[in-house]
Image 1 (cartoon, one colour):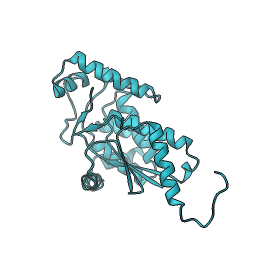
Image 2: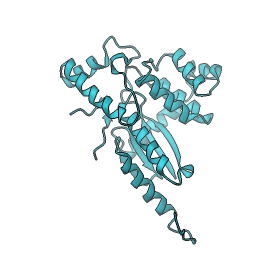
Image 3: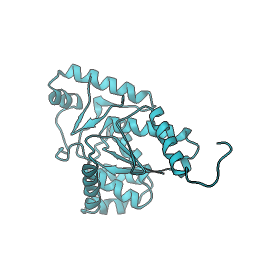
Amino acid sequence: MKIEVWSDFVCPFCYIGKRRLERALEQFPHKDQVEVVFRSFELDPNAKKHYDMTIHEIIAKKYGISVEEAKRVNADIGRQAESVGLTFRFDTMKPTNTFDAHRLAKYAEERGKLPEMAERLFQAYFTDSKRISDHDVLIELASEAGLDREEARQVLESSRYTDEVRKDEAEAARLGVRGVPFFVLNRKYAISGAQPTEVFMQALEKVWEEENANSPLQPLASDGGGQCTDGSCQIE
């Protein structure tokens, strides 16, 4: 079974959805036969690398609300993150452009380290308050994920993996992906948003049953998710 996940490393619901999927996989008896692949999606391809505003101020400006209201929105998202064991530090978060982070993830995929790299990028942004467009930061994260520092530097100083990132984004557009996280199972079923773990469990079981429906052997035993779109996250 193959699960493709379109996401962005600065999307809070992408990290929450990732963790909910992982919790479902922990309970799935055939998890060793499931491949999870992260696909590139930039919520804001024109995002700057440096902002003079906090994430609270950026959200307040985007939605036309007060900074205090934005803080309450972020606190609610933070509680959702806590429910799956994550810590989001909005007060010190560094909003930035994610294109180079996606290129680095493609390099990690080629080296068999995509799961480690994706997790490290999410954690760096949401928990460690690192600027994940800074090349020195990215090189350090690559090293922590088990990648070669010099190779990572060469990738970042070049334009390598640009085509691979753009291909993922074009594929998302072809599939009609409007927001992330967006999960595609075996190119047949789609799950949009950071759905509850139970939804992922049901999907895994359904796809597994269909995959094995034609086996000659019969075994004896065996919308409510948050989402970010176009640089914005749903707020209540």
